[in-house]
Image (cartoon, rainbow, N blue to C red):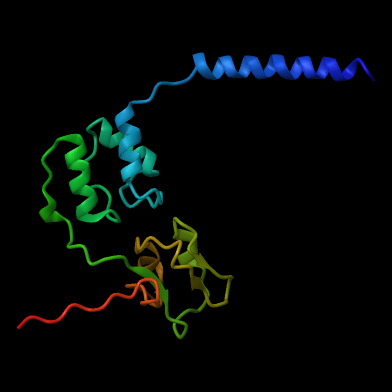
Length: 176
């Protein structure tokens, strides 16, 4: 028993040293611009750009295989930042005007619990069970609209967030 403790300690130290050296000498070098672009992207991995996630989108942007307007949730501001980062010209006229954040809202009168909406939600913002009403967590929703497209009863709409004490702002006066 007393010999097992030093033997296991030495084995742990040797394996730890070997893993440390392997991490240092066998690491895969990544293009630094890819990491910078990925930091700019929203990071929700919604798939609206047609790629499997934000890291794949960042890689495609860094290699010049995708336009800077590929991220719909990012809008014009993200496209402008990406164009500046990559030093390319971007045609922002094709993008819709930024209307601010929107979140899915489920009408309780129209929800029949078909479960189609939460099956397509990329961020798992919709919860519910079969034949029961569903609900949306606005903190997790990225406003992609995939749930709106699959709802057979048109019971889901995209709406701006309700004002709260933390988000309410005094409205600007109207100019005539």
